[in-house]
Image 1 (tube, helix red, strand yellow):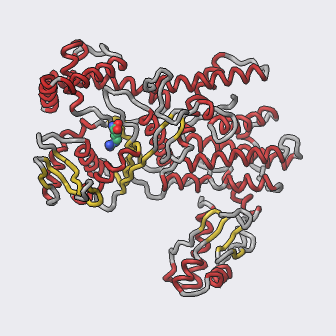
Image 2 (tube, rainbow, N blue to C red; image 1 turned 180 degrees about the horizontal axis):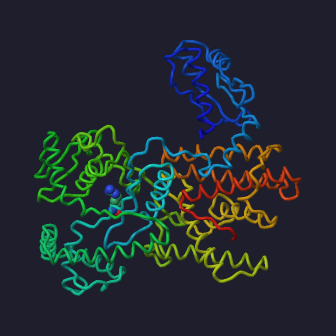
Image 3 (cartoon, protein in one colour; image 1 turned 45 degrees about the horizontal axis):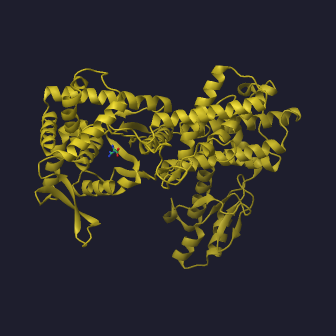
Length: 585
Ligand code: ARG
């Protein structure tokens, strides 16, 4: 079903074409939700640019548009505000009609896209032998939400984990382990990830201090990359080790990913160089193969190069991304590729995209987007650390969130004198704890840094996961209290909107599709969070003002239908954020 915005847009397009003629077919009338809700629910802004183009007075143009509109079934008579905005107020009868349709629709009125295509979301992507850090956590949570949203809309999404499983660190690590712990290179399960990370740090130290070690480590990389059996096996074991640890986090977060690490593209790296050379964009600079960039200069203002092959013949992170881009377009047939990493990599992606365009690896028909995000900080505003000053392990961070949630719950149960089973407590603590971490991340504008605070993310009031989960559980408790089965309210029951808070809620329920569309277009999950938060508030206001179970039968049914529609909307919205609901909490 079309959203309110789409329906209004169509009506405006008809009016514009009717008056101004064929040339105006498909002009965007610029319909948005109203800036100032006192004037209406929606507004159309087309009169201003149109008047400018025609050299006319915008209010006059607005008047012409209004007289050609046939909106009687949707809005009260439009008014013209300010310099020429057309203000639209939706009729309750229209809202009722739409809601009564929505309540019987499995997908809550959100159609799948008419033309699906392959979208790749490249996210999470930690590095083997290194700890998965909070930056990777953000990437995982944001990437998963984007993937879920696009999947729901019907796109063919490939979720790729571009793990750092290739490169000099392995030469270093293998050389070092051969010395201190050779069995780790031949025996599966010989290492714990913690040890692996420690060994990695020690190996790095050796590498930085000892030139002879450096030499051997470099040889080891060459051996590995040329396919030497023994090195490959050792490398495989190290990767498996890390992979198992990463998987625990993904399981706890309920995130699915297909691993396709940097090593996968190894056979395709050389062809990138050949392709760039064929296009004539390759230049040699101090022995390295480079592509010079526009808009990136060094301190003295000279253009900066992107190195794609080092002077020793080796390839780098950028080469791998170029090979990956090529593979994803040619083999995966991707039409949109989304990269979710911290904002620190913005330049890297801008450069890779530019070089790919220059080298004709990236056609105009493919959209590539870097989705950057800010840092996670502690409550002191500094880098997130443990009390003793070490970097926080993700596993610990998630456990801590669940423990906090459990304590909150136990306190609440005690003050309410409620008795619950151990399994109930376990489940609620787990869902609330993990949801709180996810929601705290997603509800921020991802570009800003965000402060990680267990207390804030677990608060029952405010824009938090518990607040949203509570609204949902509250609606379920209404049905329990009234012995109501929401699924069988009787197909004859109709939603009727009488009270203001009821109208407000009903109107807002119809705007879910617009919120989801925004996430699709802007890749900002906080737009959906804002919507769900506002929805929960509107529901609470409705519930305070409008008796449900105590009303006479037809009103009671109508309100129960509204309650259920709200619950389903919350559940769907939260599921796109990767959050599952609780029937009781
Ligand atoms: N492994 C990288 C890191 O930890 C992120 C990879 C992102 N994806 C990509 N195609 N470059 O920073």
